[in-house]
Structure formats: C-alpha cells, structure tokens
Image (cartoon, rainbow, N blue to C red):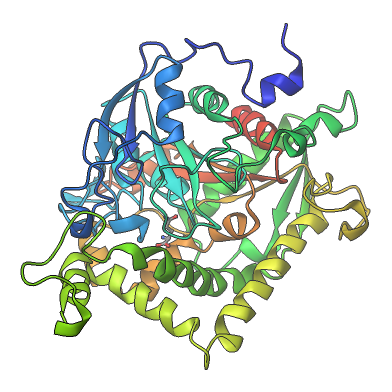
Length: 457
Ligand code: GLN
C-alpha cells in the first residue's frame, strides 16, 4: 500500500494508469514521431529528435497520443486566433458566430469539449489552460510550478510556463496529473524529492473536513458580467450550505499583477525566442548564408518572415523593457510586484509556503484559508469577430483573474459552473452552458485544489 506521500509524488500511479486513454497534446510539446510547430512558421519543418518528458510519461502509463492541437503562436494569446495555421473555433456560438475557445491552449480545450480525446495537455503561462477550459466548459488544471517537467516544452516565459491538463472531469484531470507528477533531472526547475516531501495537504489540522474558503474582495470588479457574478455567488452558496465557511480576504497587489505579467512574460519571451535564427530550427529564409562579411540578412529576414505579429510585438516589448534605459522602470518593478503578489497569497493561506523559510512567512496568523475561489474570467467568451476588433490590451484583460496564481506559481483549476435554466433561456442567441470558476491553493497543495473543485462538480 503506497503512503500518501508516495501517492502525491506520483510514484503510486500504476504503469497502466492511463491504458487505452487517448490524449491530445498542445503543439508546443515536442514529440519525436510528429512535427512540432508551436503554431509558428518559424518552426515549420521542425521535428524533435526526442519526446518531452511528459509525453514519455504518458506513453509509459499506457496512453496513446491522439493528436497535436492548435494554439496561439508560442502560447502568446488568449483566444487561439493567432496561429500560423489559422484560428480555433469554440463549439459554442452566439447569433451563429463561433465564440472564442480561449487561449492559448484552445485546440486542446476544443478537442476535450468535443470528445475528440479523453484528455489533453496544454501549457499555462498566465492562464492558457484555465481560460480555454472556462470558455469551452471543461476542467482545466494548472499544477504548482515545478511539479510537471518542462523538458521538451517549447518555452514562452520559462519562469511561468507550466504544463496543465484539460479533461471532462476533475477525476480525469487528477489521473493525468498524478501520472506526470515526478521529478525530472532534465528540467532544472523540476522540484526535487526533498522539496516534494514538504508539499501537500498533510499538514492541515487532522480531521478538519470543512474548508475555509477565501473570497478576494479585489476580484469583485465592475467589469464582472452579471452572469459570471451570479454563477460565482451560486458556487459560493453551495459550498456554504455544505458546511464550508466563506472568508473575505484581501489580495491588494492583484490590481498590479496583470501589468507586471505583461512586462515579465514578453521579457522572458524575447530572450527565449532569440534562438530562432534560421540556422538551428525549422524555417530559413531563401537566400545567402549568414556570413557576417556579406552582411547577410538571414537572421532578420528569417525572423521577420517566421514570426507572426503578436510574437513580434512581444519580442519588441521584451527587448525594450530589458534594455539598459528601461530595465529599472519596467522589468525590475515588475519583479517586485511579482514578489508582492506572492506575499499577498502567503498572507491569506492557512498553510505557510513550503518554499519559504518559516521565518520569512507573511501569514497574518488569523487562521487563514485553505482555498481561494474566483471566477476564471470576468465575462463569458466573446465571439471571434469581437476578438478581431479588440486591441491587444483589451485581449490581455481576459487574463486578469488567472495571472496572479501564475506569478506566484500556485496550483489553480478552472471548473465549469452550469448556468441556470433561466440564464440560458435569457441568452437565446448564445448556446453557452457554463461559466468557469477558479480554485487556487497554496503552493504544493494541488490535491486540496482538486478536492475542493470536486465538491461543486
Ligand atoms: N494570454 C496570456 C498571454 O498571452 C497567457 C498565455 C499563456 O498562458 N500561455 O501571455
């Protein structure tokens, strides 16, 4: 009989735990038997000589890889509309126009929502598993940073990139998560066994079944749509009726989280994407080689032709915020905000952050909460036509509720909360059936996050 610790560490999942299950992969996770493009022309023709660790683990557990799924180029986007091979459409629509499936793991979410696979892997840097899950009515789980290997996952912003799971139920997502939750020596950010031993819900007072649920006052923003607000209230009410307790909490740095994210993620991206130079991977522009003597345009031309507009925008933004005249005002400030966001969470959770020395704890000492619940996104999904009319900044706004957990590396799941009959009939022109609710836990407390989500599933 495996101990709880072994089970949490994934060692207890039997080799056949995923036998016969078909699992789709976001196409920024490398596979040796099929091309990997990250939805970018710059990677066209690229074939990886190896499988990503998560792919190896899926195969070892008996899963079959059903397909590679479409995404926003390099994971940069919230609607899966900026792919080299064309947009992704949600199965839901309004007035006959398809809705946004969310992004950037929109292809994986749609594959699960439409039953084309049993589960799918995505990646979540600032919300890219949770937002598509919310928009397509499935479960989307982003584990704590460092639990699932990033070896073979094409980087966007490596201090935030996290492999996540999309599935029809929390139970299925947990099964995939546990099969992948092991240390990987090939990923320098993979948490070693010594840290994994300190993680998890085992330190909660024994026998306490009732969850203390945090309701952050800062998430009650004007932009919250009435339908989302009503579903949020219903979810909280149901948990209260079941005996769990609700506690207003404050996460004051949340309002700065989105701007900090959109400084940090492009900064890391500008560095990570420097390697696409026309020499090493995928696409190369036609013409002469890269001899500096001939002042060859190979790099610039390859990159100019190979990257899409959004990726170029982020590379430019990142290069600027890292430049000597801007770094203090942007990159350094954003890192400070990131730390404040993390401290906000540490202050409200009952469990201290297992990554911190106990003496650095910012906990308020008033008991704290086990879990925080928020909507996943402030509104229902826009149509793809509405997305086309959005400015980049309007599109970034969709991530306002998901980026705080990303900046702090916390586990978070999005779960579909069904709309009431009345809500559904009052939106005749739209066939959306649910709203995404987000459950966030303390670092390493992934199992509590999944357990809590299951209570309202
Ligand atoms: N929409 C966010 C971005 O474009 C999040 C993307 C992601 O999590 N990969 O950066």
